[in-house]
Image (cartoon, rainbow, N blue to C red; front, side):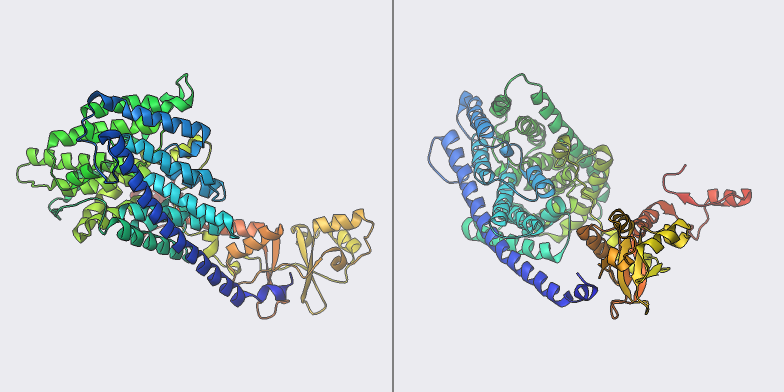
Length: 616
């Protein structure tokens, strides 16, 4: 590619990029509609299995299982579901195990966003069986994974880039959550925080379209409004802020306990001397025992969540639900069965928040805390801290209530819980499973430094050139004379008599010419004509992309208006210097207006006051 060819396609590339976004957006609309239909079908399949196993009737009416009359048979029903899921995991695909989001993350980050077709079929069926037989799960995790699988399959069926396939997978996952909870904004943010780890127009536009379409399908097939029924709430701002501070710390601790206990249970199942096919059934035995004494822990429990958010349950029942729903969840999910993590965590953490408010009301006269408000805030804070998706669940809880007064307590409690959980958990509840497989997931999001620094800021302006008429032998002679301007560079720029760029020659080119006995060739004949170039206004990221694509280690920097006029030279060391600039911004403490006691003492002693973060 010549320098003139590189300068050509800016408008054309922009047009093609817009066309690709349009194409992906149209596919996202299709995926959103499909995910909405899948959510409706799974919702009804769960209702069918629930009615069949707990009430012995054929019905698609979604009901709770707390009022079942199975008696001791409630000990057996979850075991049946566990056996079926175990068989599906062994002879179908192990990807149906768990709550689905880590598997979607793994596909995005480590498998080029490819999900096998069988996952799209077996995951919702296995989840419906597990939940319909009493599993203490929600439908959202399986639907998110299934929606992601649909997006991935469409991305595999047609010609797209891996980056576009990642967007389609995320669109399916976001559409699945939007169709489940009727929360399109939170669904978009969830996909950004847990799957994409980027905020770009190419992904944001399709995500919004997919979530909007899925929500429209939800409204058409399942009715308008959120999944949970929420009564009027009094958030007590600002008088309640001290109590929200305490609740934030408690929620952060609860998030840590939930994540650690879940994976501790998984470790115990790993030690069992039986085939993993039997683990879900073994976990279901414990679930049946818990469900016999506390039937509210069985099934999805959306009705119980609504009762908690509406402050209709007494303190003792809230404490019972908090403890035994959590216990049922970690045992069942730790056994490797299939089901969503969000709804059961919502129930247990909402019970925590409601119980906290009722206890404070008994201890502190005149506190008058609203149990429903504190239940809502805790529901968002615990799962946000456990998953490191705090922003998602702040918005999610707001979408449930549509009450602007919820924003302040949601933000405060959620970030405090996150601040408590981060130093105590190396990995989130989502990424711990991947970390145990040797896969590292970085969930921090920040702007790429190399995209914000221009080539002109880091390039070498003292350009070393050699004439195109020089022979390879003459060049070797000058290098042997230890000319520092020649020996310090891995490549030299070749110019004509007008000092216009004509080519570049590397040390490898010189060695090849010598080995072929062509020392009399000119450097232009031995080197590369019309080299790949960079421009001063390029970002370092753009220039680095060209270097990596062409497997070269340096680029001449030329004037965009005169593509043969040299203005600089960009090497690997220049790129590293750009990255080092970012590191220094994070670590080097600069002197402020107010002098610290240490700085004053340093000045008296005549020592330097420069300090790096981490120094003692």
